[in-house]
Amino acid sequence: MAPDGYCWDCGEAQPAFRSHMEITADDGAAGVSDRGKRRGTNADAMALTTTGRWTIGVVCDGVSMSPRAERAAQVAAEVGMTTLAARLGAAALPEVALSDAAVRASRAVTALAASVDAAPACTYVAGIAGPEGIWCAWIGDSRAYWLPDEGPGMALTEDDTGDYEALTAWLGADAGEPLPSIRSYRPSVPGRLLLCTDGLWRYLPDAGELRGALTSPSRRASSPGSGLLEDARTLVGHALDAGGHDNVTALLLPVTASVPTAD
Image (tube, rainbow, N blue to C red):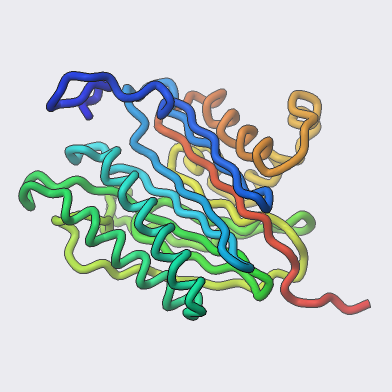
């Protein structure tokens, strides 16, 4: 897809539905992705499903300087989600499932390349939530945050970036072997696991700012509805109102308390 939103090969415009997308799952998990105000295409992708006791989400961001970046993100998100559902459904440990999914997503993106010099590429972050806690795996600078209903939240990921915020890890034929970072957390209160692209976190980089955007009086006045879909819309809307310079994606998974609190 060219920067103006038209396919390099056939000349057709990117499907209009990809300019703004919303997805939901049966347990209330939800995601919103928007092209933004300055981009001709939406090279972000997200995938969401549930299996047994698990909620599974994946968010990817196509690297803008690579060819077919939007296709790389779509393939990585779908392969990552499908692999996670299969591995968790087969009772694999969360860490093992996350590692396998990232590797398979990387191989799928690598297979898109005509050559190493023409390699589609994307970032990758996957999250799973279950009764025993939350887990995330990432490659690149797409992020995961823990946003509790009460108390301070925190970032769960650390960007794979170097000088001038240049990516040091990504998925693609020119990226080498994938080495996903994995982190787990057992929350003592319910909340949300947020997966997002830099189109959101560059405007709201801190977990406290993200929670504030969801709990501010102005948010409650403008969006009185409840639920994670409304929360995702609020976060994406904040990024758009702040300039919307990039594609923006927010995916939220519901989280129950995993550690009992003392009475």
